[in-house]
Picture 1 (cartoon, helix red, strand yellow):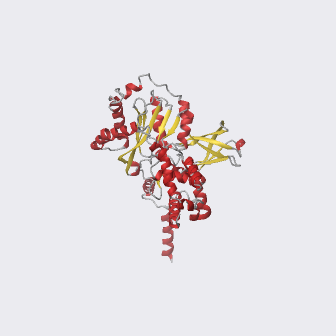
Picture 2 (cartoon, rainbow, N blue to C red):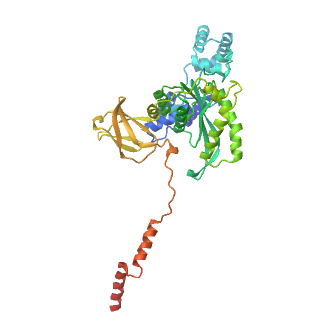
Picture 3 (cartoon, rainbow, N blue to C red):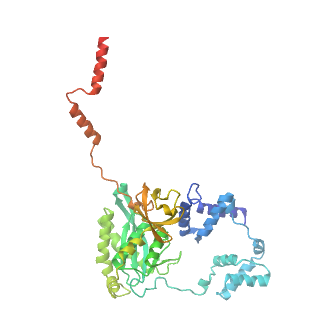
Length: 450
């Protein structure tokens, strides 16, 4: 590998981890950034799509912290010289794969070593076979049709997605915000279980739509989502664990099972958004009222071309879904954080400090809370209730990860308190002498006497 190539790779890696490598970040903040980087697709220095695992990013961060940019350079493999001297071996590797597509890279490496005495790692062979378009799946005739899977019954599987919409006036910021449609679709019936246009694309927005969907339509057995940031955070995983929902994330660049979702997105764009924008969208509330009415009166009531039934008829064919215990539902949508109780029997969360039972000093406890109400926390010690956390210093009433829950600034009252005080003062002193005037009068008299 040339020095230029090595430096290019190091610079690319640094660009990937630069945000997480910023000094002054807490471990929690750094971990959150790394998770977001790992969840996003990237392009490698050659422009190929790639994802980087959390472990790899952590390893690069440690290397950069210890050795700087040099720590991010790819080390030269011990077999590089042999590989370059025997480039014809890669052609043979391709021929071996074509001969029997089921041959693994490890098996091909063994065959090459036995024939030529040159040991090439399976990883190197696998990379070259990919560049040559000789992946096993392609050669074995993997002709899987995406989007053809169908759940056997209602609520067996829900598919979620986020659809970007138009900019909508938003008074809180004296401007507009791009609307994001969080929606859930029942895979069996094609019913749009619930959808809502949101101002923020974050975990809590996805949880709000999921909770409303469960209240309206019952509990799904599976929840199939992509790897977008609203869907990979720990709070959603906790929600599904508490409710017994099997959370499944689709593989990057693999659209299996999402064909029906994409078709629905196209219907929403062509049949709802087009009309809404033509009519003029004034605010988010109005926009969501329109969408709710259109969903229930049009979308869920039209005969589907594949099922030959309306989505609502197919969904209710087996009867109404079973309601979920409200207490369990409430617990499922709380967030959780682990903290060690200080010697003063306090814990900190999002800049707030709370008092807990002194018997918990030194113990690692779990705090469960509603991110939209940071004044109420319950404490759990080894999954057993251990009282409540009483606010000691409460600077933030909502979690910073839920900006849409921030309190709306109060409308100005127009009351000029100090102006009223001044008016009352002037009314009471009109025609009389104020104390300051007496002081000025005494001074003037002294000057006259002199």
